[in-house]
Length: 343
Image 1 (cartoon, one colour):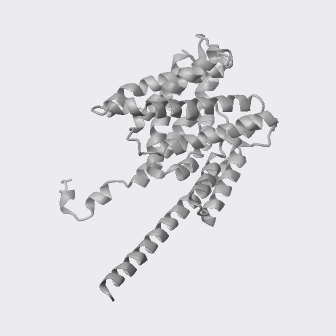
Image 2 (cartoon, rainbow, N blue to C red):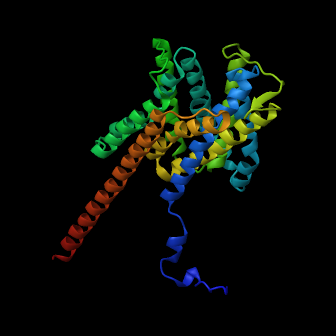
Image 3 (tube, rainbow, N blue to C red):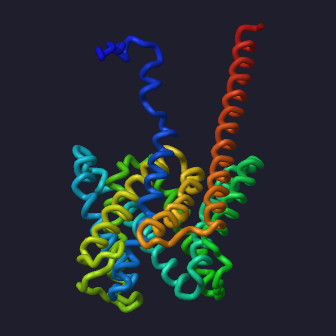
């Protein structure tokens, strides 16, 4: 078969727009990749926890190794702009302390008093908190489609998490669960900022390392139990070195997950990125199926579809709102032009 010569994209009107993905499309792909990467943490963690690791030690090492893995690429991305570190380091430390360390601590304390499903449900109310915060800040009520999408997505989350199975409640645990939601919302809001000039990899690497230092300090004073083991672990039914799941949870569920999550949020904005992030629980069900043969229930499959429907509704509301704003801006420009020309 003879090759058919393709036209140069530079000579075809609109060709570059066709071949180059829009920021929103790239952001959606990155957000889904981030959710998928985060979802692997449960499978890797389960293998290590069963061998004697405590959650505190596991997460601290996960964050530290993830930050070190991103350090080289972050420094390369920062080349020629190292002065940013002198002026922006407080924000990097705050980002790591709040969105990573505090979020992990709140979740640990919540799950120690609540059933896992309830703790996760409370944490993943973060998208609703973001919608409410944007509403309060802008004084503009979200569209009914966005509000409906948020409600539908939360309903799907309840189904996927199977919240009512073995439900355990505790007032203090609920407070920690809400604390996890607030810090998760802060993750999306702080990740979406672009006014400080910090590249995504720099923010991710600096935040991971800062969070590891904070959790290490909390463990050093005895507030977070630290224990680890060098015994072989069982992963996907095979005995292996603990380094395998440790590298998996550090490189995939930390370095890759946070780096892509920050990049996605800067393209999509915090509200939409936070709703796409709900797919983490759907991917976690799939990972449990692949890793340990735990088949998803019918309710979980329905819940995944419902979450997707809610996210689509939120995105559609965003598109319609943007169109209304453009139409309003166009009408205002026409009125001003007619006024200026006396027509």
